[in-house]
Amino acid sequence: MKTQLARTRIIASTLAIVGAFGLTVGGVALKTTASAAQPETSDFGIANTCDPSGNGPNETKTRSEILARAQKWVDIGLTYNAGACHDDSFGHYRRDCSGLVSMAWGLEINLISDGSASSFTAYAASGNGMYFISRAELQPGDALVRPGHIELFSHWENPGSPGSSAAFVYSFNSTGETVQNPNAISNFGNLGRNSSADVDSYRYVRYKSISEAAQPLPVISSGGHSASSVHVSGQVEVYAVTPSGGIVHRFESSPGGPWSNWFQFGPATGMVKSVAASRH
Image 1 (cartoon, rainbow, N blue to C red):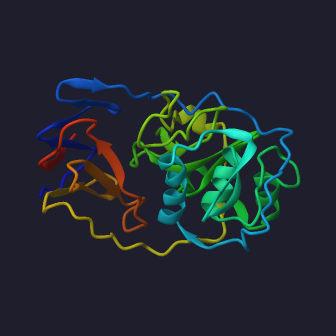
Image 2 (cartoon, helix red, strand yellow):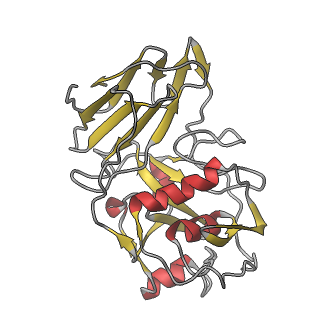
């Protein structure tokens, strides 16, 4: 395995990654969208009607657990409906942007993003379970909030330049749309990605009950086919071939910091047999 600098390019027998978001499998380009996670449906004036009585007290979560909970709503194909609630093992939460973040953080109640007393901004301003941070402090599992909308931060597109980088997010945006996320386009064709300018339009909030302890890298059955690299900013990145012939990617949020979840790279058809990492 090679240790490399800068971004990583994956070379696999049946998969090539073209540019930042273009995937080519067997010569066929897969559609992705690099636009910001917009437009969005505001939660202004939406009643907080989901009964939180069974949710229990605010939970302590690691950053990887927070992203994994958000990914669960992606995996089940849940669609945005601010007038509905979703009930599962995580609790009872509204099917909108605020419900997504409340669920991912494991909050006792469903907060909203309209600036009222029950909003994320009001809670952060008073230090009630959360607080404001700077853009430079954003880490996986933190939130981006502005009047009427909130998103869950996943990672920077360019970790070496967070002040000017686009960001990958989990975002519930429009009625009928699945969760926009870093791994695949939504049913409306949108990727969970915000331009740097769009990131600047938010305030940034950190949940107080995030466990900052570094998480061990779990073992994944990759058939012995894996590769690793080190980004120019010092983060370790790992790539592996799954038993089903796909590629997964995981990385440190900062040098020596918490690890992200495993992110799927595809392919849509065929099977990958090997993977290598090289300077991009």
